[in-house]
Length: 116
DNA sequence: GTGATGACGTCTT
DNA sequence: CAAGACGCCATCA
Image 1: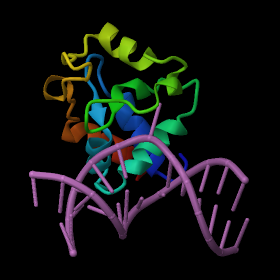
Image 2: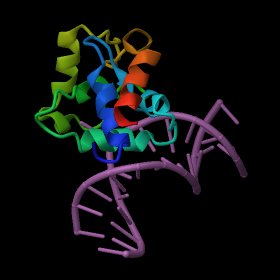
Image 3: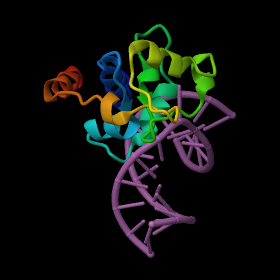
Image 4: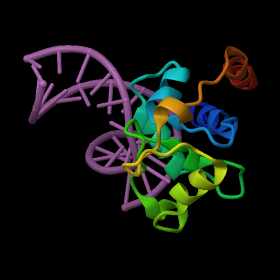
C-alpha cells in the first residue's frame, strides 16, 4: 500500500526468518535502490504497530542498532535477537557473517509482484 | 504547497 | 588510508 518503497521494505523485513538479520544496505539494495538505505531506516521508524514487523532483525552495516529505546527498552532488540539464536560476537555486536539473511529471488519477486 | 529531516550506505575527493 | 558530501522516498512542520 502506500506508495511502494515502504511497503516493500515491510514485506522484505517480514520474511526475515528468526535467528537471521538484514542490514539496511542489503534491504535497500534488494529493492534496487542501494542509495536509499535511509529510507529503510526511516521505514522502520515509521513501522506501523500491530503489524508482524520484526524491525529488531534489521540492523546497520556494523551489526549494531542505533536507538535502543526505539523498541521500548535499552537492550530489547538485542535480547530478542539473542532469544532467537542470532549469532553475536564477543564485542556485543551481531555476527553478520552468520546472521546475514539473503532473500531468494522468489521472495523479491513475490514482493514486487504484490506491488506491480 | 514547499522545505527540511530521518533507525544509513556508497561514492568521490 | 581517511574524511566529506551526496543520494533515495516518505513524513512532519
